Image 1 (spheres, one colour):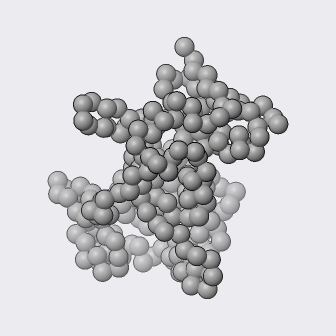
Image 2 (cartoon, rainbow, N blue to C red):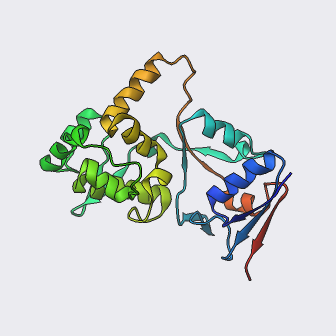
Length: 235
């Protein structure tokens, strides 16, 4: 058993601490603020619950599914997203526009101009960046998909996931799957097509994709759901 110190108490630190404790290690989280949870903070006022950061998680792999079920008591706190939540909206020029969910709506949506849509067709012909170079998520999207798709699609998406600035997020660490698509297949469209072909040949049962949240999760975390983990908060 090792004694391990983890700086910060955001969701990544908490998840890492849980995995390490399951391997038999003793972890201490070091947090400089008064609250744990990092960018994920919840505030209740009367019957209303306000979220400062991400308020849900998409279960899209067996690894995520197994991780969630490994935490004692967490399954009972899971809340599935309403079917109506599948439709998302982005504001442009003072009007709400539904985010496209398929090829037909992508072509017909007024969210992006004709120039912006045509710019995406250039994506397969853009060479991959050198693996030795560091690139932000914002630079990656602008380079591969253009400024308009960045402003009215990816920027709001990243803000909802990380509650952070895409200009400051490293692509290879914040979005390793997108980074791998470019490095391994030369681009996003090529990589997506290759992944579809691979999934079509795979015999592995597909995970049931869903969007979920949790009841009183911050309270649950603060009560110490992770055994053998001590949290030190700077006073």
